[in-house]
Image 1 (tube, helix red, strand yellow):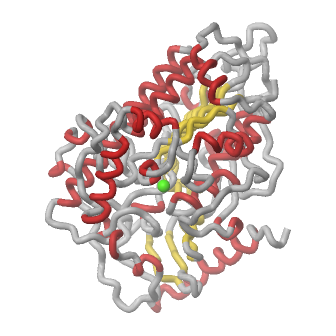
Image 2: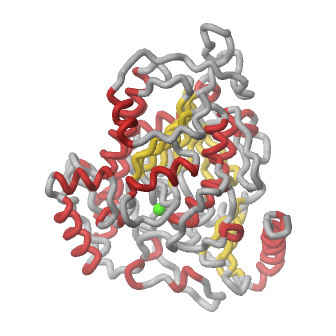
Image 3: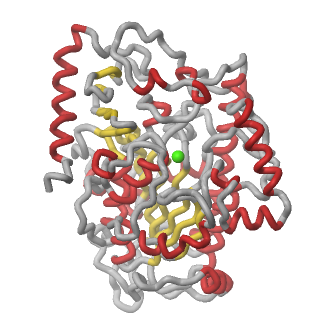
Length: 506
Ligand SMILES: [Ca+2]
């Protein structure tokens, strides 16, 4: 039953996909979170473990959902939110892929992992992860899409053993949109076979050479779109799943990451005139400087009038495309009659500035980049009355792992700093975290219920916003004499945090 050693090959995986037979109900129980309403196992009359669906996107802003910002149509995410809890103050632990995803897998901060930027980093197969803890709790684990837990190079089809070591059994991994130009995967093998891969490469080279924010549909069209590939592979897998263990399925879309190349018909769904305007970059003044002030070049393109609105409309189209794929996955789970007993988390690894502050991409601590959409929906939250569907406590994205392990009825044995959300899901009066932390390039940010502060590499505050009075982060109070005491207190919190999470000391 335990599948730790069960490393299936791609061939047997495909063979298994082809076998559709009656689902055998899992015999495992002992889920501390299962209550009397949980479905029962017919033979032993014990609550069934829930299945677990982790839906993740890459570079989706916190406000790019119908239920959060209101400017993107996402009926399926809205449905998950209406049956779950949406956390409105969730930040990624690093606003860029590689450090963020490493932190997610390990529950460690960049100041622990030493990975502070998008660098070539391969997570060692010996690393302890929460995915292993889910598997050890009796789950069959799977991954469709992007992990970026190891460098995007060579042939991802040959990295299955590494993914197995990370805790993921059944794997169909792809690179990100840029990596798909050169990294082999099952998906790019199809592109090559269909004779479309060269056009994809040519389109990318052209747009990044001249205008990175160019809005133009991908030559792949909808049929060979990477997000459609990920959604459909996950759907096929879940439809055919016929093992005894409950399933954990991680669906990790590569979109709505740049470029702005959404295929039709999604490219034309949104009217650019109806997109929310970008937040204008305020003058820097004489405050201390930090990473945000160094972002330039391709991240700060010369926009022409209307460019930002066009980008936003294209981006919104990509989010809706992914939402439709999520809808198909939910439908497949519903057809299995498992939707009610499935825990769902939806999140993104970081946001996208999409023109805010004159910037594109991420890599800074402003809302557009650091704040992420985050929804948890469980068999229990579905049954609640419709109050308290959102929660503004600070949450960190490394909280995903311990939350899922708790719902799986497992245990994380290794030292890590993620914190299960199940207590606050059960009682929204609980303080989950007093503050949330994010880090990049040896800078650190703290967000609490009232303030956001960021320190540069000299440990000097260079961003300070009152999040209630100034939700758009226009009025930077860093370095102002009247803020001295606030800055001192927040800095001391940061220093306590660093000392409490110092793995060197352990
Ligand atoms: Ca990313």
